[in-house]
Amino acid sequence: MSTIRYRWLAVIGLAAGLVGWAANSFLSQNGYPAPVLSPVALVAIILVAGATLFLGLRVRSWRNGRRDRELDPIAAARTVVLAQALAYAGALLLGWHAAIFLTQLPLWSLRPGHAGTWASLAVSAGGILMIATGLTVERFCKLPPVDKDGNGSGSADGAGEGGEYA
Image (cartoon, rainbow, N blue to C red; front, side):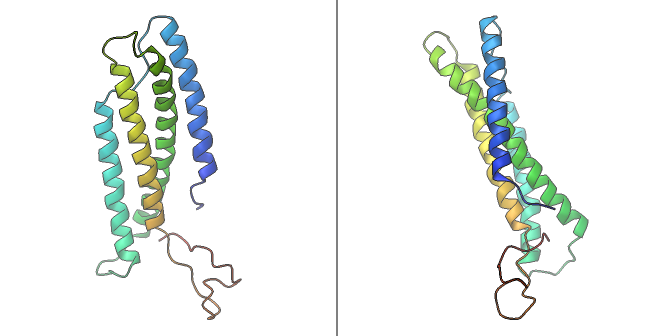
C-alpha cells in the first residue's frame, strides 16, 4: 500500500476548484443558489474525522508498545484506507467549496443573507480538518523502519526510509 501523495491532493483540490468555480458561475448567472453543502454536513465531517482519529489512535497505541490486545491486521489496513480516503475526500471538498467561497466574495455587498458564502467557508474548514486528520492517522499507522543489518540505519540499504503499515 502506498502513502498519500501530496501532489494528488493538490491536483484533486485544484480540479474540484475549477469545476466548482465553473458550476457556481453558471448557476449564479442563471439565478440559482450556490451549489454548497449545508452547514449540517459539517457535523457529519466532524463525526467521520473523529471516528477515523479514534481508530488511528488505537493503531498508534498498539504500534507504540501497548499490546495488551491483539491488533487485527485487517482492521489496521482498513484504518489506513479510511485515513487516505478521508484526506482525498477532504481535498475534494476543500477545492470545491473554496472556489465557491472565492466566487461569492465579490457578490457580498449585492446579496442579502450570505448563507452560501458562510456554508462554503464552513465546509472548506471541514475539508482542511479531513485532510489533516487523514494525514495524521496515516502517520499513526506507519511502523518504524526495521533495522535488518544491525548498524542502526533503519533499513538494509541504509536509506532510513519509513517502514510498512501496521
